Image (cartoon, rainbow, N blue to C red; front, side, top):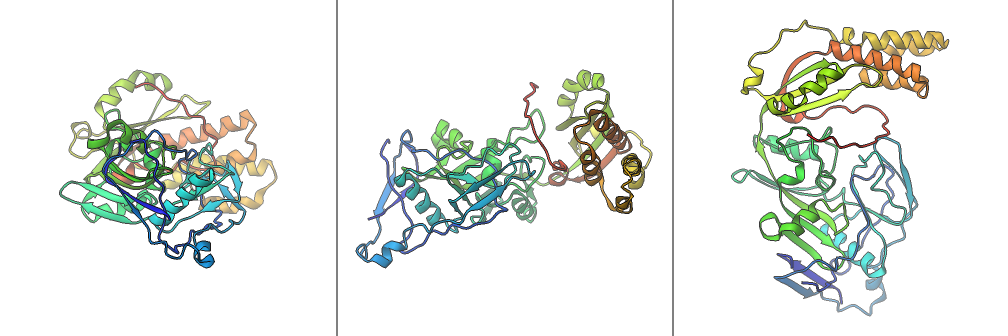
Length: 416
């Protein structure tokens, strides 16, 4: 029969099988909008060890019943095409699964382990390099999206790994709490958010996995393990950023902090100023973001600090600039380029277009022409100079920003 494994801690080299409830069917679905947030292939967890593990044989009284056995099989998946968030990578797979419960996820992982099948977890498809894609087999846990508990006293939240970061933020708002750090957007699933070590900004603020206190992970050979920061040391730290290599994250418990406002200051440095001021800014500000605009001498600087911090007490005075004035460099350039190309049909749409749309349309006119890109980037530099100023909003709103458009990303790590 199938074995159900209940594990409270982790340490022995035995390999235990797991399965779902008798008669429970694993469903695979074709959904082209599901993509990858974090992933690598599921591997046999022979190196994992376990103690305090209870193994219960499920009632399999109908083992000889052909219909009952068919309920434990996986229906053949429809061919599915998955596209990543920025539209730069896609994959086709015949094996795409979307379990609707923890027991279905357990049974799926167990099945793939027994059959030697590859299975890669996928989330919201935010990875610009397509690391989460695999044609051999993929599983989305988007349906495992419950917020299980908010512990106000301990300032912790427990969620299923398919829950989106934005949903967690909204739920925490009811308790005057928020997450300690955020990436540029909040559309990630919590499993991918933690697995990739999303980091946000701030020299003294750790990546989000630093604030995880417990995880529940479904492993290929050892069943479902609950690992904690206090009890499982290195194994816990490896699993939480394992990208699916040691199992699939099913639940996450993370520290929270009191909800608070931040004061955001946006301005523009030259490249020389940006280099000279970097260490000072990292020491003075809670959050710092640099955005250099290629082919220009402009580096956009964005700092965020609590309202009561000393650094925001003495604010500079800036002239108020309307949104139409900020967008004027883009709009003027687009009208000029469309007129030159005798493509005036699109000019009527320009007043309704925002920053991202204007920049994307301009770049798309001649994306491989360096001189054209220089003109577009010069317009963007002027836009940011006109955006200089302050704003005060809740931290979860200011720590996110619109990355804008289709992106081909080369990731580089800079020492701080």
